[in-house]
Image 1 (cartoon, rainbow, N blue to C red):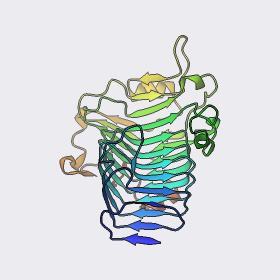
Image 2 (image 1 turned 90 degrees about the vertical axis):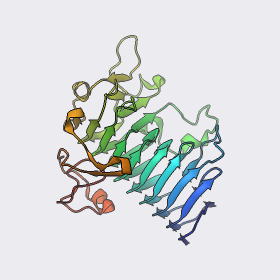
Image 3 (image 1 turned 120 degrees about the vertical axis):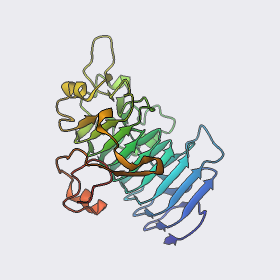
Length: 329
């Protein structure tokens, strides 16, 4: 089924090979689109705005909710905005092989949210003024390449939530086991703070009770990112767990600078860079929402996997500068 060129559509969908394209999903009471138990769904070139207009709390709505064992759902080139009381696009429990590419998300609680699910690609997106632009929770093997994040946090989290003594016990049972919540990749991203956010660029956490049992990192690869602070820097560059346990503390550490983080974690961020106030203007027109680079950014090792390059439609010459936009040469 294909739904195209529709205005103010909202609905609950279940099935295979569904395409929703060129639609406006606006001013809904809870979710804009709710997809459950489906396969091979495509959401492309839609506008999602002002969902959860009733400001419901205690229940967690989203512009798009992809729920309970959906396979190969792709969200491409959508605009998600004006969501101060709603998540953006949320894969919630038991989903597999999500794809989130070339989307623009502004002013949402969680922009891209992947929870208790397996394998996703998040690449070439722009996140502006979100509580968490990228949030990965209790999931495995999420590949995050070449996104641009403006005054928003990238967060990777694992907790002790399991099927035992859980109010929704079947939820965690649909996703990876506690000891499998790892394997993430965070590469080639551009993270810019204006100095107003005062939060870490990168937030990596786990439950205190896991400190003694889960001592391996959540990442398979973390490198080639560029962090920019256009203003007074936050007091913390990154929150990180699991870190080495110091007597009398838990296994979460706060690192003030990129260099300090690298000293403690030499296997990560070896080629990443931090740019301070002296670097100059980064974007062509941030006030107008134009986040294309106005000047060359530090070049990266070109390690973009072929499947990610194909999803983004990038040539072999692209992928050598951080972020969603590549300077055309």
